[in-house]
Length: 257
Image 1 (spheres, rainbow, N blue to C red):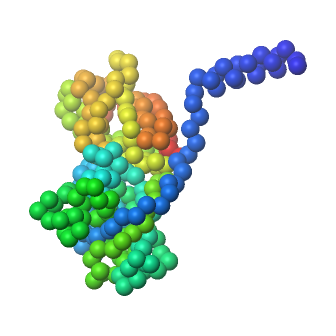
Image 2 (tube, rainbow, N blue to C red):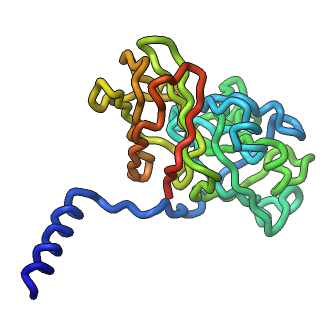
Image 3 (cartoon, one colour):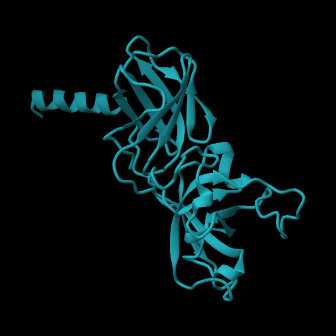
């Protein structure tokens, strides 16, 4: 082997050993669950929610969303995840539409109702896996009068237009950063922030898709390092300019696969 080629090969191997290669997110297997609906025919009642995405129309999540039961929500760890759902026609041919599916994004939490039994009104009680879907999404797979239907679901890659977005709220020594429009796995596992005067500072989940830092970062350009729940990591260098203000949203050109 030519010595120059060999040296290049060794350098490539050395560099590659420093990084773990993570492929794009792959669909999961199918699991049984149940589904109801909420929010009205225009899904206006689904706005806001426990993930913090706010107005789902303007932030791009639309009407194909769902609130997840405790067993699925994971204290906000599931925020942004996407699920393909079909109504189990064999189990309930009366209220299920046959041969159709809908893909939804987790944007809210369906709280348990311990005053009602799990099989009669307490649909979101642990350990049930349940989707309280936006009505327009639910009606893609079920007949309105049915109210609740058995479903099969699989977690699937999220498809998004554009890059990941960061919305900064808070005040002075408290930055609350909403991470939205995440493709691929859809959900964030960990996150760090770096200012021009700091090193990388770990952030913690405050609620839903909101991550917090308790550092004074005013007047500094900010970078974020985000790791998704399937292990992909991207660095968004200087995505926030030094003249940023609380309440602003910054869109990147980077996206997860």
